[in-house]
Length: 207
Image 1 (tube, helix red, strand yellow):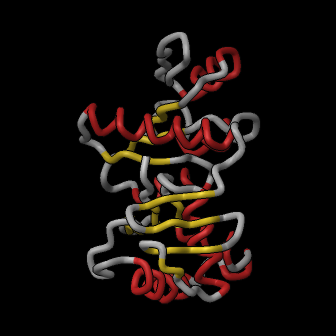
Image 2 (tube, helix red, strand yellow):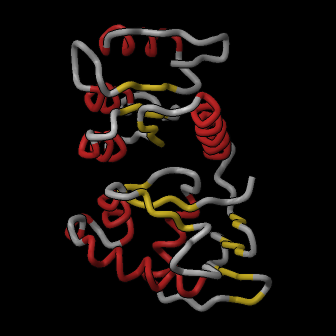
Image 3 (cartoon, one colour):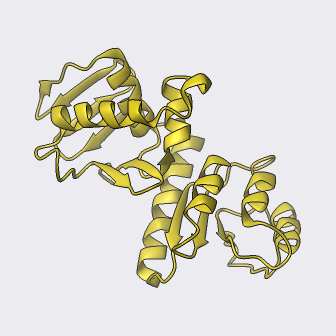
């Protein structure tokens, strides 16, 4: 767990929650493998009072736990083993997103040749306007407003189509395929709308 005055560590969930409440962290790095409680529950309890970025660490075979933590409000995840440079890069992205959110989310998102104007609902590629259907735009806008973050299948479906469609992942595959055809130079090798296998999607925007 990291704070503006330096990192503070906790080896147990309850200890971490207490430290977070007293230190108000800038970012939380949360290992799901805790000795006293489920890491997902720590994430849920943190989200009851703080919107600071949460990056979860997990072993490769805990895909269900990663999805659960992301659905509880975690911003990103890393699978063990990982390099420290990769962790630091994820931390920088999460902190940038947090700063943007606090300072009123940017209404213009750029990703390579793509420009997504969230105020005017206009999407362009190299200055040429791309025509999207209503649901295609809603899907892209949700990804763009949360660019850099991993968004789970369930969270996307709930926010774009509604809670009743939260389990209809086939909707997502169809619309994602359509979006990529319209936006990506090579839809089979997307550069901007990336798949997180078994988890969901994330949109990679420019710095």
